[in-house]
Image (cartoon, rainbow, N blue to C red; front, side, top):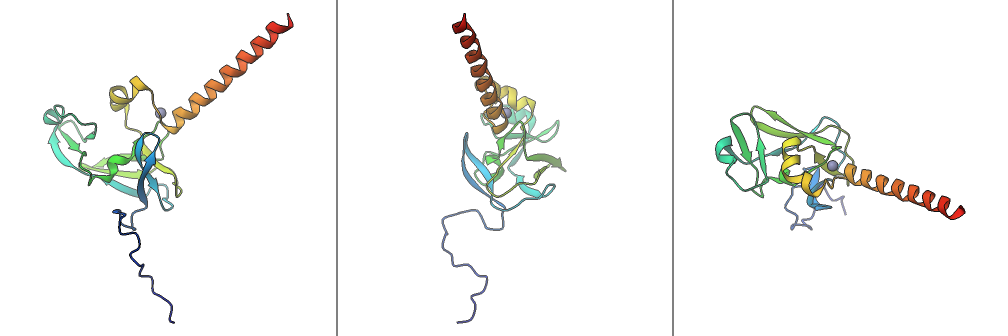
Length: 167
Ligand SMILES: [Zn+2]
């Protein structure tokens, strides 16, 4: 038999994301998230945040978390499922960033992202204060911080009790 060409047998037709994308939607700590499937180099474009362009006044009335303010006048309503960028979760120590260029929201890597890594960007202070602050941030960086704090607290507690027993 001659070697089979690069054409893949359509085995996983269920997956909606096309293979040229360097990511997939997967389960994250806080629901769904976007995960790299290929190496994404620092500085390279990942995905565009798409949706209806609305005047800020109208967007302010909407009851959705998927709003991205582009400038003082316009907001993109990214709540459509077609907008895969809406699955990118917030992180306080992100590996990507969202940049606005001519009213287009482009998400690109600010670090080298390895296959399997969750892709994240910092949603900014306004979003953080409105939606994250109250129940606490669950991003990897904050989670790590919490673990460290908990273990140092435990350690100091142990030390105290040991001292008490000696006396
Ligand atoms: Zn955080």
